[in-house]
Image (cartoon, rainbow, N blue to C red; front, side, top):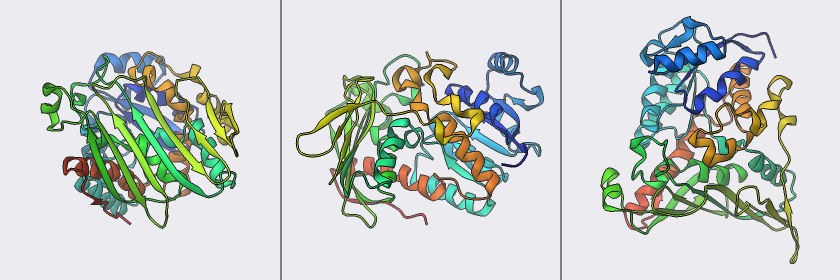
Length: 371
């Protein structure tokens, strides 16, 4: 790669701060800045990571206007994603954003349009596509070891009543933020979702149900896929369902199948014919990374292991350096990212349309095309 050249500002410093040292270690990064409303957090992180105070902001609106900022990485609460992404792209900044892309189909379309107009890189930073577990299964698919894929299933079961989650999450419709459960199913089949039928199950408490006007404790969706006879099934819950955190995918093929572990650190299962089954620990993925950021796949490199995202998510499966590497490589190479605007819009709207289907009693909904 060429010499360091990119100045990036990270907006939102919950688990967003985990990206500071990864960017700093990347050879194509000139400088790293941060943005958060809390001046104390800025002081602490600027000191800890020796940041340029001129690139530390308490007001997001100041960031897109800066000529010395090339890229903005948004790691803020979900309701801010569309507004901040559009501000960044409309200011001609390369833009990365944590999941989901937006909360409405209209905002997804607006981001696709803004990305096209700007000619800049957009990437939805979907951790589920870069976990060691998913990259292992993707390799099985791409090398033919699975044979023909016959069915895929994903789940994202989470207890967001735990302390540490923002108030807006209370009663949040499960599939409205469904990309962790959905995107692996689409990516492993190298396709996009076309239609969805979704059913809501159970009932939230009256207080939770009233927050977003959504009654369901759990939502389960089945998707038809473009140019495929495979059906993808995804299940999501956030409140009033008791289970250890599980963010999983299973893939069933003619030669081999992979099932995600039932309990954290219990090991996954490979089925390879007849009644054969064996537990496996998937290998790390550091060999896919450039040397300076390889070690960031390790759980021990998480700066704040007590952050609620990691108490429940086990460090996002070593995905963070992969996200940084792909985002920066797309900028340097002048190409779209692996999870570009049209792809991210499909992954995000698959969930939005799933919730719409659940609210309409399981009506089949066509997922918009953004190509």
